[in-house]
Amino acid sequence: MTIKLSSKEINFLKTDSDDFNFKQPETYFSDLLWTKTIQIKTFEKRLLEAKIPGKKFLCAIIQISSNISESIQEKAKNTFEATFNSFLDNKRGIWENLSGTSFVLAFWDYKSVEKASQLIVSLKNKMSTALKADILIGIATFPYHDFSKIQTIANALKAIDHAAFFAPDTLIHFDATSLNISGDRLYQLNKCDMAIKEYQKGLEIEPNDINLINSLGVCFGIMGKLDKAQLEFKKAMAINPNELMVIYNIGLLYQIKGNIDKAIIYLRKAHGIDTLVFEVELLLGHLLIKKGHPHQALPHLEKASRANPKSELAFRMKGEIFLGKNLSGKAAREFNKAIKLNPADAVSLSGYAKSLELQGKNLNIALTFAKNSIALEPDNKLFKKRLKNIQEKIEENIIPEKENKTA
Image (cartoon, rainbow, N blue to C red; front, side, top):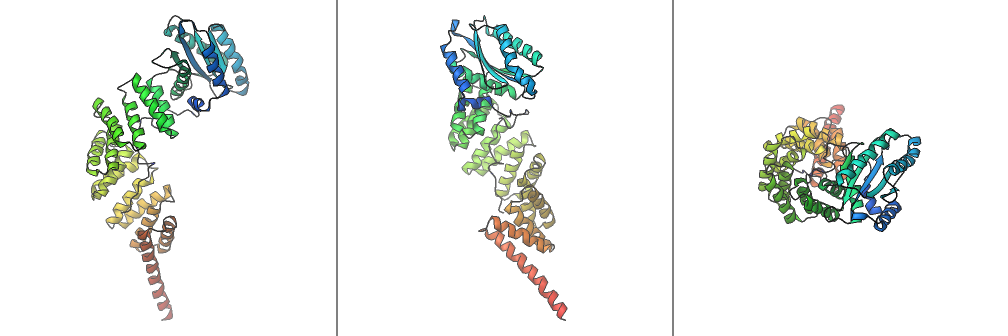
């Protein structure tokens, strides 16, 4: 068999931005930390120069719904300024316009964080009523943990990204989950070194957060630091022995290290917890095939194709199994499904061609598919052999026809 696995489909599992049952934000405010806009720089400078009694303040990022009309957008800045001034004066706070519909502010001289939070809620409600729009807010306070004044602004930017996952009218206080989401964003941008720092910082706040521990392990795994990855996954399992994503990730680590038997043990444990996880069923099916147990693999691949009918891999693997059992009709159907999902799947193209050839029908179509597979993988000896067999069969059919006509 010539099964190949795509790194995009067989990968570590994370409860990250891609897996939340919420809609990701179209843009991330935390991205401003890497571009350092003039507005952010100006606000940082003003905050450092501000005389803050008691050395405590609250920082917030406010975004007015992007779905509002242009006339409301033009009104937004004046409304924000008027609302800000109705609650605070220039001696108690500062603000900057980040864009047409977003603002950063900081204020101080409050009795407690609870009182300060209530003030922000009141500001939010007043703006929402005035503009008839949803208001998204991320909040961070100083002092908090060991973050600096400048880092507090960054924390507020991460908090509003956190809020954006839930609804366009949400207020979120910065916490360990905000750092998890920030780390996930960096992970998406292939900035694993920076993501690791976010996860580690989150774990300083919430040492037993399984999502953070798992995410840290995933980053180590992606970077090839497998022993460090395994250490993190084992920590997570010690907290919850039945956490499916962690069990799967340990199994994947063993597969990467070449210990397929141990990988199968962990993947079967994950399967026992939930039989509908695509990655678990697909990898378990693949490894059982590798160990010479295609019959055992088939039910897992059936579940994988139902869990993710848009992935050609499960259909292709089923096609390979049926082809190995000389069930050419079933093989053809599976390969055909895989090709519809990915016309550039060379393995399925060649497998489909072989399935048609075994059935002795549509040989010219089989020839086309076989040629297409070799165009994608010119050095594949199996594909070349299949093409040659099809060409010979076509020639065999042509010669008798000529003899009949002559006779």
